[in-house]
Image 1 (cartoon, rainbow, N blue to C red):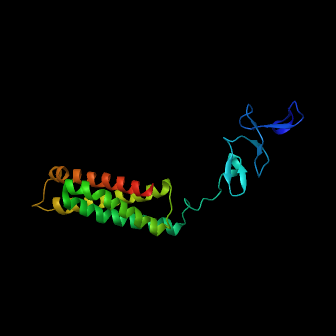
Image 2: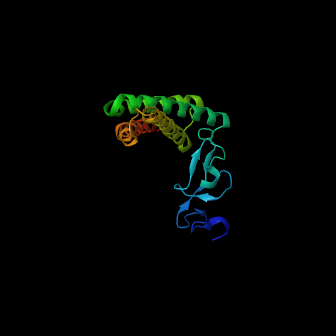
Length: 182
């Protein structure tokens, strides 16, 4: 066997062996680095077969955000989470369960439009994290209104009355957003 996995067959033809799987014979080479690759290691693209290292994108435009897109998407997600949190607190458990997925899908679509239809794990984090921050802000505001002053509700009564419906709304909205972002 010679350099780069090149061997001579019994018929005199050159047989290549994959650089990652030396036991596999192949007749394909990477279009960029010229290393022999098997069909499992080949990434097919518009310019031909590439190995795993050469086929990776240095900059993926579908998952890379500009600072303006990050700020805009985050603001829309937090604002939508705030509005949804107030609605989720007002409508109760059953309606939060029914309306949560619709609100989450709508919010995910709004954030996608602001960010230029980006995808990926960072997009999920922006949408679901923004919803959680907005919902927490709505819950804190409602807690300050209902528990403040001499005639306010006790904190434990507020928590037992409002937190379950908020959690149901947030989980249902996160499921709806994840469904929309897949």
